[in-house]
Image (tube, rainbow, N blue to C red; front, top):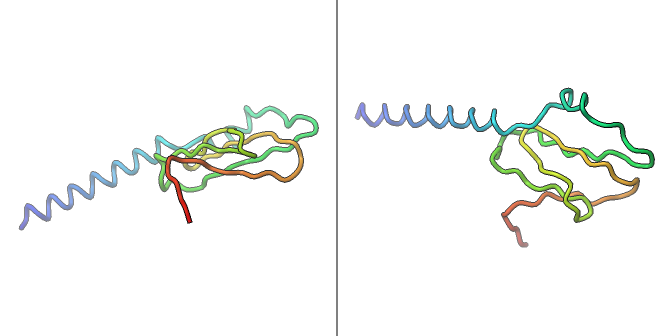
Length: 101
């Protein structure tokens, strides 16, 4: 009985430690850090940001597309940007998982 409780506690602890490690490894740069290295927005364009505010599913890094053109990768607790012409655009994220209605 004590062995079962101990193994459950040990397993739970290992899960928590693993989650923390994956969360800290998979996050992207903060906005303040990235702002220092961002080039100015080109004339006649606007900047589209994709921000992922959670660490849930940190191992999943969907490809970001704008108007069906690849522009980057979405990372947990991070963001990416793409400079686009003004107007309406379709932003989509693509993973290996397929959903059909």
